[in-house]
Structures are given as C-alpha cells and as structure tokens.
Length: 103
Image 1 (spheres, one colour):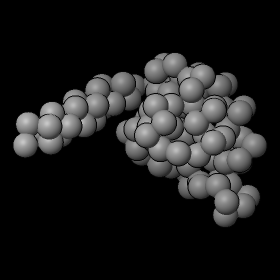
Image 2 (cartoon, rainbow, N blue to C red):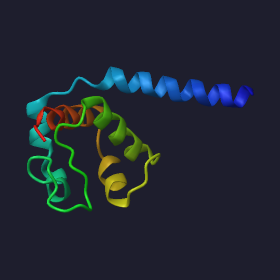
Image 3 (spheres, rainbow, N blue to C red):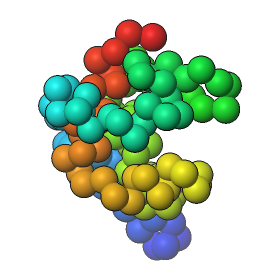
Image 4 (cartoon, helix red, strand yellow):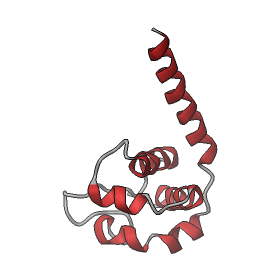
C-alpha cells in the first residue's frame, strides 16, 4: 500500500512539474524544429501514417510526451535518441511551436 501511494505521488508530482514547464517560446521552437521535420513534416503534418501529426496538439501534451521520450518512459528508438539531447527549455519551445500550428 505504501509503495503504490509513493508511486502515485511521484506520478502526480511529475505531472504538476510538467505543467509548470509549459511556457515555451514559439519562435525559438520553430528554429529548433529542424530535426522534427524529417518525420513530422515541415508544419507538423506527417506525410506518412508511420509518424503522428503534431501540429495543433496541446502544448501540455507535447511537453509530457517529450519528457516521457527523454526519460525512456515512452519507447521509440528515434524519439528516445532525439529527446535525450533536449533541455527542458528546448522541450517547452518545441511544444509551444507545434501547439501554435493549425492541423
């Protein structure tokens, strides 16, 4: 019981920390998006069903996803490799940029 409470507390704390990090710079995110374009398209719309469209996703969802890829919680070899090199600022900026795009 104590263990599940500790795990639940950790997950909630992580979620709240993620919310606090979502305040990125759209223009900086656009500048940093070069590596994303290969799979997710120039405007966040993928040309193949193998990669998701990220344009217009919520900023908080994108922040959470990138943090999960960086930590290894979500598994995708390409995304894990790319995300591990991102700082919290990079994640916030990229998330703000892609959230600002229309689907």
